[in-house]
Length: 101
Image 1: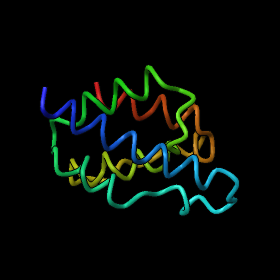
Image 2: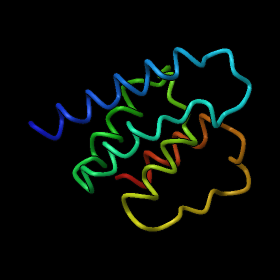
Image 3: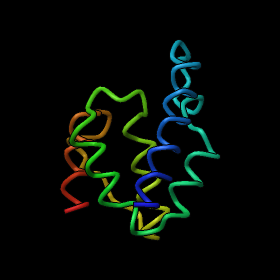
Image 4: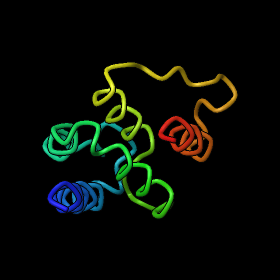
């Protein structure tokens, strides 16, 4: 329960940050390092919460590429994106959900 609450609070902060920067063309502007760190601190307990967020909130303001970075920080391993989904946010979202199973 505590992990879910912390995750939800971090998501709210991150989405508010994304809302503030929504007109930026620079994808790096959508990163909220403080919220990312809060999620990373949850460790592997955050992985099912991230998966649920990706499945249930496909219209989230948080960029899928940023989620990939969070998952990599938590797991300590990089996920090689298949060539055919690079640049395709829906494809990357599906890839992330698949590796979080």
